[in-house]
Length: 115
Image (cartoon, rainbow, N blue to C red; front, side, top):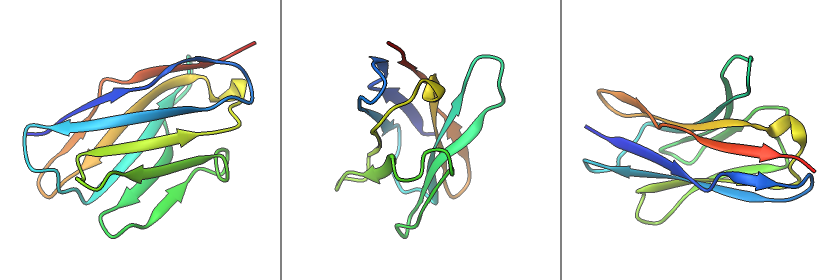
């Protein structure tokens, strides 16, 4: 079993930056797909960014050019670098990982972009 724990959220002004982390534990971290979702209050959860085990990336149009998904060399942490943040980015951000036999959600971290 794998546990995913997000961190790095907080309050930031428009135009600012945050880096979210998703740390994996409980087993060897070998994923098929790691991704970030977000859910704003009263809205559906949506895909923000995805990273495959081969290094392919995909981004929602709303964050393309501003957000970057990456992983560390140990392959136990996935990051979401968020630049030029907008109030519309305010949401709970969730890490979601697809592995060979199972998939897992993190508990989420709050990102609030406000003046």
